[in-house]
Image (tube, rainbow, N blue to C red; front, side, top):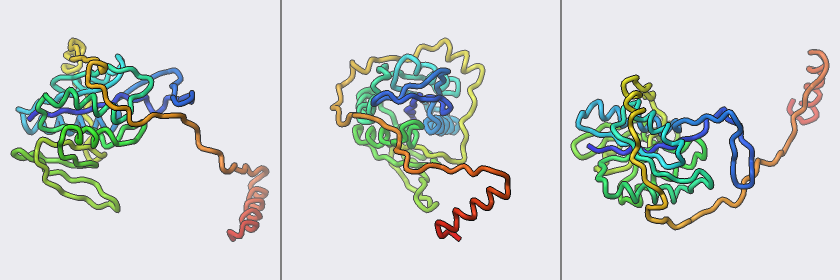
Length: 254
């Protein structure tokens, strides 16, 4: 079984950002990591490999040169090979563009299973996976929390609204997006990290792939409008209690 895992490198949540037109610019210190949902997808791929020794896991990421760090971590966790589609960081590629680039390379590779996070940790759109499946003509299952590989098929359990679970059988090849479940991503091993340092990712330029149609463009970004202000009560405890009681009575809340 050949498994492809799509990874996205994102800024650490603790990073602070400045809004500049249609772009968010992080302020130092700058730290990046693999998007947490994508890391869960990688863990699912590695668990499949643990159960099926003949399985081979390829990790792919699109982005600038810094993406190599995320791919090396994937190697450290146990991926067999890594692929880097080199693309500029700004402006950020839209989901349809990312799906087109990945599909242009993956179409001829003969992957049996493609895994991705249910959404990216930064934009939280969850669009690349289903778009990629559509471009490759594969069935897609989203929000999967558990999967089992069979002979030419998968049995998956996906999360639904209201706490319900749906169990499906999917014929391979297929694409699955992973939701947070009981599994936790493993730590990289020292031996794999040493191997990763000596490994050069297979790199191809996004400009050399089929040029996708630009279907959307971010025109501007703005913080949400301030609709109400908070009130800080002053004085000792008794005075604050009296003021709070008066406010609640004024607003007919008592």
